[in-house]
Amino acid sequence: MPSILLVGEGNFSYSASLANLNQGKDLIVATCYETEDAISKQPLSSTNVEQLRKNGALVYFEVDATRLKDYVFLTNRLYDHIIFNFPHCGRKAGVRKNRELLWKFFLSCVEVLGQKGDIHVALCQGQGGTPADEPRREWHNSWQIVAMAAKAGFILSAVTPFSYNQFCGYQSTGYRSQEKSFHVDGSLNHIFTRSLPLDNLTALHLIDRLTDSSASVQDQEYCDNQVFRQLIGREGFHPVNLLYEELMKRFQTNFTLNTFDDEFPLICEVSSFSSIFNCPESWKNVFYVTDRHRIRCGNVDGTQGSHTSSSQHNVAEDSVLDSIANSSGLSYLRPSLTSFIKDIAQRSSLIPGTLYVLSGPVFRKCLISPWMMPVYRELILFLCYSPSDTKASQLQLAMETIENVMVSITNSVLLNDELDFSKQPLNVQGLHFYQKTSVYYFINNASDKSIGTIRIVTSEELSNDPSFIIITLNLDLVAMCLLGIEDWRQLWTDDERFIQQFSQRKLKPFKKFSLYPPCYTHDVSFWVEDGAVFDEIEFHNITRRVSWGNIVTIEELEQYEDVKMGRISRCYRMTYQSCDRALSYESALKIQLQLREELGRCLHITLR
Image (cartoon, rainbow, N blue to C red; front, side):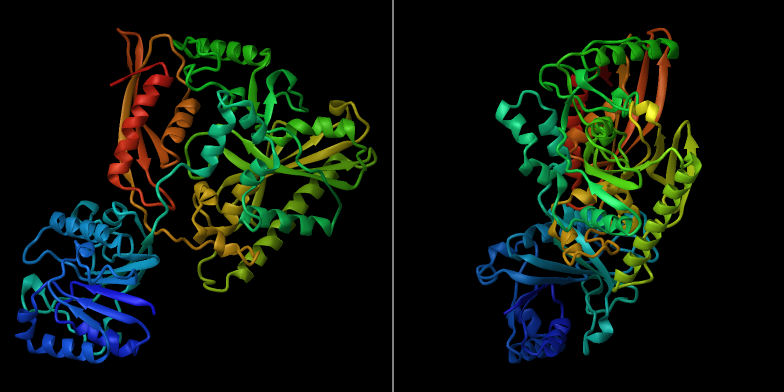
C-alpha cells in the first residue's frame, strides 16, 4: 500500500482532510512536534486526531522533522510521499534559521523516502526564492529552498499552487507560534525528487578515456570496439538517434540512399591525416591523445611560446601548427567525419543522384557554453551530380531539401506534443543561409545557432570524376533546437526521466525534470607567466574536465597588463550549475579548489 508521511502538522486539519479524500487508498502517517497532552487541550486539533484514527491513519507526537530516522515507528517502511506544509522555526526566526530547518529536514528524509518517492513542501508567497514566486524575493532574502534541497541530493521537479480550497476543513494556524492564521494566498507547493549522485558526465568520461595515452593496449583496443561505440551512440530511442531515423525517412522520399557504416577510427594519426579540406578544424581545437600526468597542457609538446604581441602570438601559433602537421606518432580524436570523405570517394563508385550517408560521433575542444559541445553525433550527406548539372541548381536543391525536411519534422514534433501545445519547441523550420568563403552555413532562426553547413566539392579536389555537395549536420544541436532542450549536457544525462520521455520512439518537446537548479559563482585570477602563450580553449577544456561538466558559463571579468613586470593578469568568473543533478554550494566550492590546483599544474600561470 502506498504511504504518505506528514510532518510538522499543527492542528491536523490538513491531514484529516487528506484522509477523508483518500478513503483508505494510502497509509497516512501524521506527526507533529508538540506533545500529545498539548494537542489534547486544543479542541480543533483533538477532534482532527480522533477523525484521523477513525479513518485508519497513524498519529504520532513529539516528532522532530529534522531527525526522522531516530524514530523506530517511522523507519519500519519507506514512504512514497513526505509532506511538510509551511515549515517555520517559530516566532520571529529569520531566513537563515529557516533555511537551516529546510536543509536538515531534507537530509532527514534521505533514509525514510522511497527511491521513487517525492517530498512536498508548501511555502508562503515569495519564501522559496524561485522564479515561480510572484513576486519574487531577492535571493539573499529568500529561503533558497532548491539550494537547501541540493545539500541532501534532491532536485525540484515540479511547482504547483497550494490548493488549500480542495481540503475541506483545512485551517492554517501557527502564525509566530500562536493560534493565529496566516495568509496562504499565492503559496506554492514545491515537489522534490531524488537526484543521481554527482558524478562525471558520461561524455566527458569517454573523452578522458580516449585521450589518455597511459591506458593499457587492451583499453585502447576497447575504445574502438562495438561496445564502446554503442556507449558513445547512446540508447536506441535517444532523441538524437530518433532524429537520425526521421531524417532518413524523409530523405528517402526524394533520393536513393546509400548508407556507410561508421567503421572509421575514433583515434587518428596526425601523420596519416587526409581530407578534401586543408584541416577539419583548427588544430588547436583538436583533442590529442597524451599522457596527462607527464606533460603540461598548455601546448601539445609542453613547450612555451611567446605572446608579448599579437604578431608574435601568430608566429608562435603557426610554428606549433607546423610541428603538429609534421608530427609522427601523434594521435587525435576525429573532429569531423569529413576527414574520411576523400577515402570513401576513392574506394567507392559514386553514382550521380544518389545521396550517400555517414554518421557517427566526433570530438572538438570548445568554449564552455550550454550550446557548445565537445562531442556530438555528426551527419554527413554527400550528393553526386553530373557535369550537366550546374552548381547553382544543385546548391538550391540542397537548401530546399534541408528546409523542407526541417519543416516536416517540426510539424511532427508539434503533433506529438499531446500534453501542452502552448509550450512550443524552438522552431527549427525557420532557417537562413549565409556564405563564408566556399561554405554555406544554415542557421536556426529561433536559436540563432549554426546547425550545419553545405559545401560544393569539385572533381578536381577529389581527383575523381563526379563533383558533389557535402551537407554536414550537428544532430545534437538540431535535437536541442527541435525539442526545446537548453543545455547540451541534458543529452548525456543518465537520469532515466530524460530517456523515458522518448521510449515510444516519438520526438516531442522535452519536459524538464529539474526546475530552477541553483547556481553559484566563483572567481579565479592569475598572472600569465612571462613569455607564455595563454590558450583560452585549453583553459575552458581543463575547466570542463575538472568540474565534471558542472560549470555552465565562464565570463572574463578583467584583463590587466603590468607593463613594468611584462605580464598579464586575467580574471574569470565561473558559474556552477547542473541541469540534471543536485549541486550544492559545498560541492561547487570543492570543485573550485581542485580546479585552481589543476590550472596551476597544467597552464603556465601563477594563481593570485
